[in-house]
Image 1 (cartoon, helix red, strand yellow):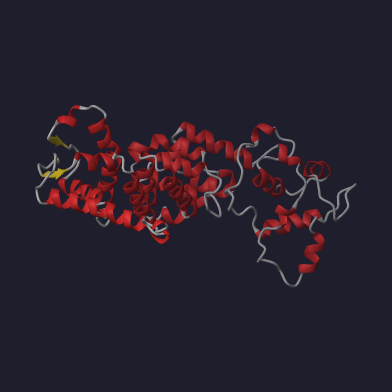
Image 2: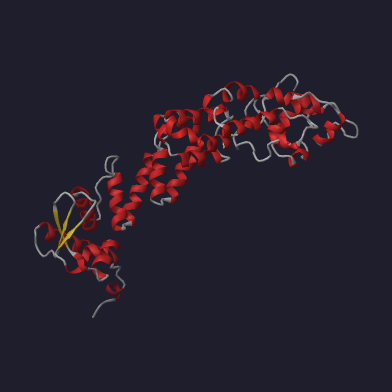
Amino acid sequence: MATAVEENMDLSQYKNGRHELSYSKLNEFRKGDIAWDVTLKSTDGDEIHAHKCVLASQSEYFERMFVGGFREATQDVIQMNNISSVILNNIIDFMYTGVLVKIEKNNVLRILNAADMFQMEDVRDKCIKYYMCLLHDSNCLEIKEIADTRAMTTLSEICLNHALKHFLLIAEYPSFLDADVTHLLQLLKDDNLNSPNEEPVYRAVMKWVQYDEIRRKHLLPDLLENIRLVFTSKDFVDQEVMTNPLVFSNPECYKIVKKVILHFNFKYGDSLSKIITNAKPRTNANRLTIDEMRRLRHYNCSKPPGYSKKGPINLLNYFNHYDSDHHFPQIEWNQYMNETNFLTRFSEVWYAIGDNETDDDDSDDEESDVC
């Protein structure tokens, strides 16, 4: 009669041991050329013995092959196309032992191909983890390409966030010049592209286009339209953008840049058609320089009729009362880029810029000047 102690014994470790022993014994059989029932022939002609039941239990691909009524279920030799003997051996060994060959840069893609072919999610996950460890400024767009083509959503998102955060560093590597235009556009359209201003973004894109000018110059209008030139200076647009032969010789590019120049030349009272309203600064862009910030404070102290010094200012009404310096409306449009927001009142975002760049001598005066 079994004792109470025996009845309450935890047999989970024992069962696990039996499971490992069974697979170990089956592996000995196939290695020793005993009691196997199928031969897998790789692309390069090598033959690997195995058991159909083991293959079917470890892989959905083999399960459908042997259990789903396909003709391979009755065959003793099965030709495995598009996989080398080395990788096929690695995968079959993993099925029997649970130990996968070390994943390295020179084999990860082939192992990933096999994992996708045999529909082995655990092997696929190991490859994804390796790519995450391998991720670097020099290869993140290349890895993103691999992730996108294989629907590795999480890995693709990690690569995208890395590329957005380190875009300017990534653009310095030769690998950037081989980036896919789809990925480049995805980065340019994202508000979180990390750049203090838009000039280096423009230069990186032009470097990419000029690397293979014949094949890429037709892509420039789409790229240029997603570079936020309205957040550069008028001098930069006049002297560097408009003088580039790839830009001024392309009617679509010329039209895009001309609109930006009209925007810079906007003065209160001009037609609103000169104003670009569908752009906004990137999350990490420098909104205003410190000199511009001081100029804003100076204008705010002018106390237009009907407004208290401390209160927020409606800029549209302000311009109705005062013919301000022509730079001031340009700063406003550089900041908001939206005709609706032209009515927006001053708020914290205007004077929270350059927190570490304050003047100690007149800090008290500046605090009293901010509206």
